[in-house]
Image (cartoon, rainbow, N blue to C red):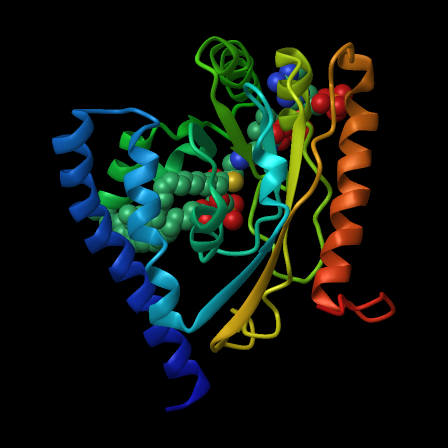
Length: 251
Ligand SMILES: CCCCC/C=C\C/C=C\CCCCCCCC(=O)SCCNC(=O)CCNC(=O)[C@H](O)C(C)(C)COP(=O)(O)OP(=O)(O)OC[C@H]1O[C@@H](n2cnc3c(N)ncnc32)[C@H](O)[C@@H]1OP(=O)(O)O
Ligand SMILES: CCCCCCCC/C=C\CCCCCCCC(=O)OC[C@@H](O)COP(=O)(O)O
């Protein structure tokens, strides 16, 4: 098979798997929990964690203990591809919902399963509406004791580097006064590259970094907080990926 055909087949299979398994998982969620609730994320996670075996992907996870903070927290991670759903579910802590663009809601059964799992949908075309939703989340995550997962780059980026961070996630953390936990996935570029139609098996290193406290911070500190997370995550990304010119992780 040519690399282009191989890529098309594997991506189509991934999408078909997501659509079919979402429909099955939706039935399970409705039977077990009856409707939209973060509790459904456990069921979704159990289904999605099997996907890696179909694609020959391996995850090597470090730092899971950093998720064990008391109470709510904000998790930020790099976003490379639609394949990130596998990496997300590999480490997803309990009581954690993600922030996603509202267009995802219209992806048939995949949209339905996201809705049932409690995903918070934002309208990226309207800054004021997105900010309003995020501010509401800052309140509910505290009262409902949930963790929230945001991709601060705001879009997929599979270049092996990070895009500049949007600040919504950090405003959210400061408004809720909750710690920020950065999670970094090594670059996919050695096994997945949509531009060159590469999609083979591969290993992904994941590191959950220590929480960064936000107690006492105000909106004036958001830029600093965002810059600090960006530097730490970029350094980690390069280390995990063996980026040229950076020390390769020896493990
Ligand atoms: C069973 C099988 C299943 C199959 C598998 C499927 C699914 C599994 C189930 C669930 C998993 C779901 C996973 C979903 C993943 C979804 C991933 C995505 O969709 S990523 C895209 C969406 N996310 C984001 O965009 C988040 C990051 N973006 C932001 O944070 C943005 O800041 C924003 C809030 C969206 C606003 O963006 P915009 O471009 O409009 O504006 P700016 O960022 O430039 O901000 C303008 C200005 O406002 C300030 N600001 C921002 N937020 C706030 C705030 N909350 N309060 C106050 N001020 C705010 C910001 O600082 C800027 O000001 P300044 O320039 O002065 O700094
Ligand atoms: C009846 C409707 C049929 C719809 C058919 C949809 C077919 C696609 C099916 C499954 C694809 C699985 C996708 C898993 C979810 C991935 C979430 C994701 O990664 O979203 C991207 C978003 O973060 C950023 O978007 P952009 O990079 O800005 O763009």
